Length: 425
Ligand SMILES: [Zn+2]
Image (tube, rainbow, N blue to C red; front, side):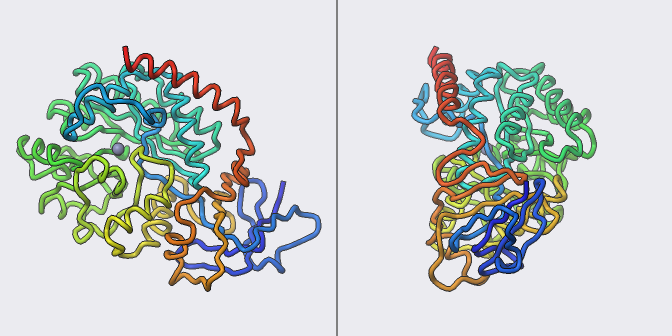
């Protein structure tokens, strides 16, 4: 059914800003965009947004939905350095997940994302004792939530050689099954260089489909860099290049500890670099060098579903100095989304109606030049007034519209009890 969102400030964040604007949505698509007085008509339902901001649905390009039920979970050992944080919290957690708890973890994480206007999530999954078909259970959560996503399973040596084979099979199976799918597609998930031996890298490189893009933690901690140097390469990006795994659709998360050669590969090949400032601060691993890498987007790395809040943290952690902030949030994510879903990622007639409406109502003058400051100081990473995906209103005025939140909370809590019990066994 068609409806109109009107009396709003509409912006795609890079080329268009319409005051007193309206969007008409029908059959999942944006069919018209313009001034409210021109679009409003009697026989179509009208949502008066009272001056709120309409933004494209946001992208979280690096998430770990498997971590969504970990809040308050005590590590099982010391967490003095990055390796210990992985071993005593995240790896212990992912080994405790089964398909059902993975599914509810993903669903919970996606609902938290919807509240903050996120309509596309690129997930990096691990459930080391439930690998086969695990991505299907994540996909169910995406379908229930009605969001777009790229899913992958993080291949790692840490469960042995046979496991690497199983992880790769899960990635390829899902990728092949979802080629060209308009909502969910697959990628090749790699945990990180330092958990993949030369033998594993060779095996992966020899057996993956040639055009299958990777999604990897790259140079997150100094230990990843040191490992790559020890293996005879110039660093984590150079090692990916050595095995023929790097191309312009590769998703490289973090990119903090890199060599001159690594930076040169990034400049030459221009992969998708994802900085995760809140996670980096939390793990005390350093910050990406934005003087060396200017073309990047922001992810949350499982810390939160709140992408705008992450942009605010990024801005503050860099003492209020970041270049091209709107490109980070809108233009580059639109380009990345469109490589997989050609008619999505921005507000445009004929495109998928993935939309976020802020609670914030600007009262001071607004333009593309000062939009970023309205987002940082006005919206402040608050929950959205409305989130719409593929034309379906998922969230409005603090309520989920397509879910019984009480029922889901009950099911999620049951999953939490089971998961935490296994974790502590
Ligand atoms: Zn991550």
